[in-house]
Length: 444
Image (cartoon, rainbow, N blue to C red; front, side):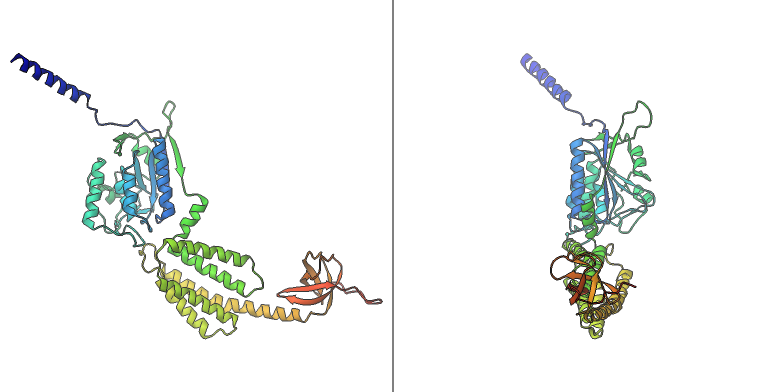
C-alpha cells in the first residue's frame, strides 16, 4: 500500500514537472528593422521574383516585411503559391494597399488575406477577389475552396475571420469592416506608426512589432529600407503588359518600315529592332491570340509593301483593316483589367493610316526626287570642303553634298569628279585640273 502511495506521488510530481517545463507560446523579440517592397502592376515573373527575394532578405535580417501593393493580380504566375509563401514567412508580413488610388484585387487581394496583417490607404479600392491570374492561364479554385483556404490562413495567424470576399471593388472602410484589413494609413510612415506595438502572427510564432521611427531622444532607432525593381527589371516588367507590347510592336515596326525607304540602316532601324525585341519578350509572358498577332503583322506588312511599290491602293486599305481587326483580337483572352483600351486601338489605327498612307509615301517621293538630282551630277567636277576619310562635305554645282572617297582619303580643297551615286551620297575621286583650266567657283 505504501509503495502504491509513493508511486502515485512520484508520478504526480513527474507530471507536474513536465507541465512546468512545457514552453509557453513563443513571442519573438521586437523587430528593429523594416524592409518595404513596392509591388506595382501585374505580378509577372520579374515582379514575383523580386518580391520573394526581398522576403528572403527580410527573413535573413529578422526584419518586418511590408508590401506596398497596387496590383490587380498575377500574370502567368501561380497566385496560390505566392500567397502561401507570404503566409509561411518566419517574420511579420504586412500588406498595405496604398497609397491612394491604389487597388488590390485578384491575387493582390489574396496577398492581403495571406499576410499577418492587412492595411489599406483611404481612397484605395479593394477587390474583386477573382480572377486571381489576369492571363487566365493559372487554374482557379472554386469560390468555396478559396474562401475556406483564406479563412484557414487568417485563423492560423490570429486574425479575425473574414466576412467579405468581394465580387466587386469596395472602399477601404468596407475592407476594414469586413476584416480584410485591420489598419488604415495614408502613407508608409503613418502605417509604421500605427502598427507599432501590435502583435502579428508568423510561421515561427507571434511577434510584437517595433516599427515606429524614433522621434525622441532615447528611443530605439528603427531602420527602414525601401526597395524597388532595378532599371533592367523595371523595363522588363513594363514590357510585360498588353498595352506596352502593342505600343512597342507598332512603333518598332513603323521605325523598320521607315528604314526600308532609306539607304543603309540607321538609328531608326536599331531603335525599331530594340522595341520589337522588348515586344517579343512581353509576348512570352502575356497570353495572346495567334490569329490577332498574325493580322497585325500582315496588315502592317501589306501597307509597307504598298509604299514600296508606290501604289497606295488596295494593299493599304486591306492592310489597315487587317491591322484594326488584329488589334482588337490580339489580347482578347486576358482580363479586362489589362486588355487594350478601345481608344488606344482606334488612335493607333488612325495614326497607322496617316503614317503609312501619307508620311512614308511623301518620304519616298522626296527621296526619289533627290536621287534623280544626284544622278544628274555624275561626271561633274566639284571641290571638297572638308577631309574625306572616307566621307565628308563636297561642293558640286552650287550645292553642298555628302561625298565618299572612292580611293583613299582626300584632303579639303581638292578638285574632285563625281563618279557615281550611292543612295544619297556622291562617290568622288580626285580630278587634277588641266593646264590653263579655270578655277572652280566658290559657294557664292
